[in-house]
Image (cartoon, rainbow, N blue to C red; front, side, top):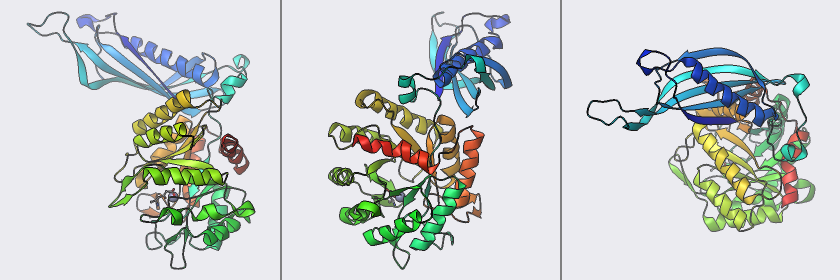
Length: 426
Ligand code: KMH
Ligand code: ZN
C-alpha cells in the first residue's frame, strides 16, 4: 500500500530562501495519515520516526513529491518508509524571467525517513461489509505458492529437484510444513524431461493429496515448444483426480534464448478449456501488456473477475523484477477491477521473482499486501552460491519475510477459501 502527494513549498525559513526540514516531515505526516486511513479506516497517530535523513536543500518555490509505503503490518501499528523528491525547481539564472522554472529530468531525493503510526486500540473500528469485501483495509493472510518442479530446472542444476510422484508428494508436504498453501505443479517423464501427461499429473496429485491439503494448481504452460493439447494434459483429469486450479498464460515472450509462444487463439482456447473443467485459473503475467490481454479476455467473457493473477517477473526477455514494475502491475490490475469487475470482490495477485529476484519480490509482495511464489522452478539458490536443499527451505525463508512484514501466512484452508471462491464467478 502506498500514497503520494505533490506540494509546492512556499514558506522560506532560512537565509537564501531555504525551507526548513519540518515542512518535509509535515508532508510525511499527511502521507502517513492517508496510509493509516487506507489500512485501518482511521487517521491514526504518528508515534515515532526511527530515521530521518535530509539529503539535499529545498527552496521556496520547489515542488516536492512525498511518497510513503507500509512495510510492516503490526496489530495496532504500521511501519512506513517515506521519500521526498524535488520534481520541479524555479530557474534562478541571470537573463531569465523570474517566472522561469523547470521539471527536473532526474528528480532529486531530498529526504528519506522511516517511522511508525498507531491506531490506539480504543479507537479501532470494525470494517464495514463493503470495505471488507473490496479489501480496502489491511491485507489478509499471505498465500505462499511453492513451484516445486517446473519444466526447465534440472537435477544437474539442483540435485534436490523432485521428479517422481512419490518425490513430488514428499516435497509438497515439506513445503506445506514450511508455510506453503498452494503447489504449482509440473511433472516429468521417467528420464526427468518435462511432460504434461495426464496420468503423470494424476499420480503426482494423488501423492500430494495423500500427504497434505494444499491447493493443487497444474501448469498449462508446460515447456517451450509443446503443443496446446500436450500442455492441457492435466485438464483431462476429472472428479477426485482433477486439480483445484490451472495456470493460463496469456502472452508470448522471449524466454531466455527461447520464445514462450502463447498465441491469442491458443490462449482463448485454453481459457475455454479451464472454464469448461470448472477450475479456477491463475493468470500468468510476464509483462504489462499481458494485463491488457487479460482485460480483453474479460471483455470476451473468457475470464470472469475477481481474478487471481501471478506476476512472473525477471524472466530474461520479459518485464524485469523491480518494485516499481510490481507496483505498476498492481495498479493496472486495480484499474481492471474498477472498470470490469462487478463482483464486489477484489482480484488477488501474487508475484514470482525469477533467479536472484525471488526474495526481493517475495519481500515486496509481503509488504505491499500481495501473495508470493518461490520454489526450484524459479530459483535454485537459498542465497548467493548456496544451493537450496529443495523448495521447502525457500518457502521457509519466504515465510520469515512475511512474518517480518507482519503478515499472517495463509493455511491451505484459508488459501482454498480465498482462491477457490473465485470459482463461483465462473
Ligand atoms: N515453463 C514455462 C515455459 C506455467 O506453468 O503456466 C512456462 C510455465 C508457465 O512454467
Ligand atoms: Zn510453471
